[in-house]
Length: 129
Image: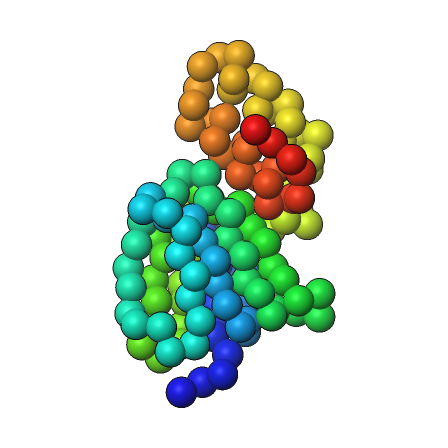
């Protein structure tokens, strides 16, 4: 059994991030899932406003991404695939633009867009209600 997971976060247009980590935490439609090496195979729907965290990754110790829609796939070989409709790494998120998107979506009654904006802000480390 491997001591690390191989994790990939992909969207239809690109690979957002790939590398090794100790644990993956992702929000699914049934609640948060935590995956460590040796986890049983799982296929679950990502929540529309998910934040994915890969602990033990990079020299900073964590990778965070906002991921919207799609799937979390865990293989028996220690591979975790986040297959999202859209995904964005925390360091690539423009916080001001995400706040503006949240305001516009909330005022316009677009709950899906508001959820995406909230997840982008949470991934970037911002407090949102």
